[in-house]
Image (cartoon, rainbow, N blue to C red):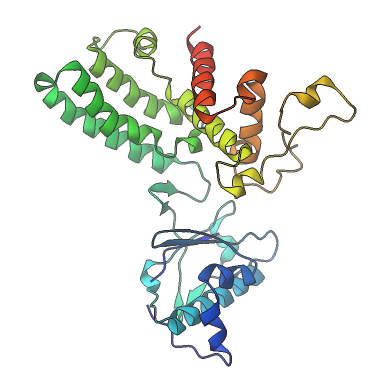
Length: 319
């Protein structure tokens, strides 16, 4: 369950409200056992539960109540209209009669929410996200086609990367493991962009075009993003919550593979409770990481790793 975006007043009183002056909002949230992510003015709360939704919603309501008190003490306001609730991995009727409330206002479940520009749905299929990205990419491509007579080759490529490729690459680590029919919509947009930049005819086979441009296909670009995040996490260049999901592979007895900088791939039992378990970072990252040659996994710098990893993926897809 995720609750996003807060800002309207809550007129609550507590005996020891002064304690809220010495706490951050994150500390208030953690006191109730919830996790949170904050970015600028966007805040998201996460609460996992398996059997008793009533207890989970009670905890969430208590947390929201305390957040309102904290904001009131710190002369801030909450806006219940900006709250969104998403139930992930369970049918909506699971919370029937147990919807969370804020300042006496019931917060209904949403069929999709936007998290930092990414559309999430209860099943995490990302269908809405892919549809939005592909439609936006094709819209920009139509506009670039109109500018094509006025741009030289270098500027045409620059505009295409700025308006189309960036859309396809934004948060593309989430696309790893998606069904081919879903990823295909993004690939069609990239194919159209490649033909635009290269000047290739509409019926030209796309593989040689992508190879000549040195563009990785959409699926490979997503894998490259996951590998880059993995390298950063393992080398102290990324967020700690990603590193916590990566465990080194330790063989049962001393083997040469123990020195290969491999990662442990979680068993199905260990990820049983995860939504979209086959696409979870803790599963996908080790699987992709272990396919890399040892010298790439042990690359001394991020720049060297990115260069070698891209060459490896390029060779895999085009040779």
